[in-house]
Image (cartoon, rainbow, N blue to C red; front, side, top):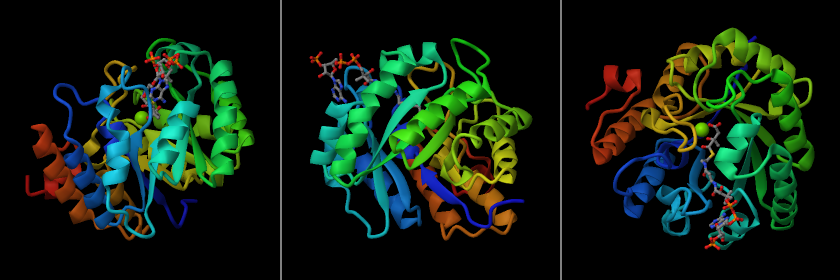
Length: 299
Ligand code: HMG
Ligand code: MG
């Protein structure tokens, strides 16, 4: 049975913009994007990333972004923090929720965060302790849950093992990333069936990229398994700089259209999200990759 309510976690300002080639997106544009998304009714927005600016220059203004946004009551603005240095930066910028990010693939872990899976988990421990002291919730990501750009197939057991480690460390929710969007519905369903044996289903989220156009089908498959939290990016923005060829997250507009059709109300204004997607892609010099935006949009 499908869940009766779905929580959407908006990724455009972080996953969406971290991979943007060419000139850096101005801080003011990022701030306006985040404010527009909040005004459209999104209540969970990943707004920035406190990673090394040498690794990801696109996120180098994380502090300025977090300081610059007008915070809307009831909206959670979160940020990625791969280590204690990132967490300290996030705390100084008043971030109230952070996320650590690991992987189910050794090779991807090395490329993305320069350490093994075991080393990454050891590095996250003090981040969770310090965040806990500061009263900040921590989300955990597992990347490459349906395939890795370097290793190919990834076993659901490995995904479940890393998800369990993050959950037991204190992450309140584990977001399972199909980083390169290679999954198909049966594989997604089997992956969730295995992960849910280690982490309660209500603490699992689906973070699917849409490289092969399978994200909506995969989401439907995992919603049937009871997944009630979906990560999506307005206009389908995004990709990971350490996963070549990976395209954006599933578009928020497309997920909203699906949910509306299923009678699942999110309180989010679809037209306002479409307008925001048209606006941000105009700033970036292209069009939204959301089918719904193209069908209904003004762009
Ligand atoms: P490292 O080089 O091993 O780190 O990088 P280090 O501790 O040896 O430090 C090296 C330098 O970086 C030092 O500076 C540190 O101060 C600095 P130096 O002395 O050379 O001047 N540094 C930092 N600066 C700012 N903020 C920090 C920070 N940490 C160290 N937090 C590190 C390790 C993790 C830092 C690096 O590999 C990194 O930043 N990686 C980020 C990769 C990334 O952002 N990837 C994209 C996000 S993940 C994703 O997109 C997947 C997801 O969407 C889910 C999915 O789709 O699957 C979440
Ligand atoms: Mg991602």
